Image 1 (cartoon, rainbow, N blue to C red):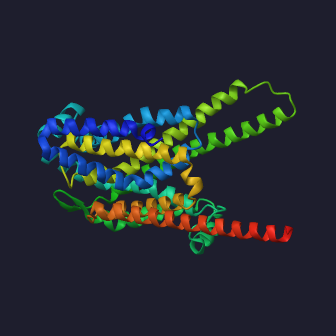
Image 2: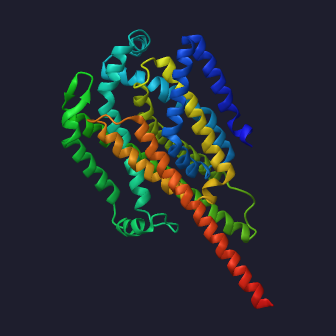
Image 3: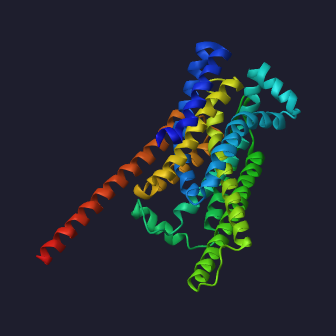
Length: 377
């Protein structure tokens, strides 16, 4: 099972490290290995959240996520995205931007650093909305009940998540963004941050809204189908229902890709603390992205989220922490190790809480069983 799920990740790791040695010797080998570990540690919460969405999709779309999705993640976000950012911010054509990335790494890094406030605002708002919508939803299973119960009650207020996100964006634009960190010093980027943050919010509402809409439609169709089968009238799935499944899966896939993009922002920016070589960055972050993809599928196939019910909670709290960190980094530098450790801590805590819960339920079940046996005797 492990080899089947992680086989491609192992193969890409071997190939990537060989290419690194050919490209830049053993120094490049070490840099790529470090970047891979950085990406995995920063994105573990991404895998948990992705698994919660991916388990609703068919095996076909899970394969699409692992094939086309990984191409988008590795080549799109880890290689093309930084170059596009430089092309837009420096007003260069794509060819000149690629030439800059390969032949003038210092200037290329400066342009990416200057674009960081806009990237952080977009990604921060997208991730913040994911976190807010999660904690304001009333769910049967609660991890930190003392916190989640009152928040669930507040969540009954319409558009509360959007209002809070906009307030956070406004505060960020009026504080961190007025003295944003760039390669040339601290400058006012409040307008840029506001526009990028609103764009991130709109992206979340559009993509998340469409995926939710088609998911609801799919559930309605399945309900009607079930009723028809019970009456022995239906003769298989109608064509419209099959098409609807495609739409629902497509928008859920699109939502996953935007989610992955938002998670990758901190990894791409953080990679510049280790190297400004675009080739080594793409190799290291790409290997890490492969493992995140494989881990997502592994969690789905093993039913880990069903067995350890608080994992999803921990991952969403880690998302909230990452969103806040991204917004703070508009002005202040925060080391990637801190970001990674916060996510690992929250997910580790939620995992241990899940284990304790499972043991408690098993003990209670055993006690009930013993009582029933005694009563029967």
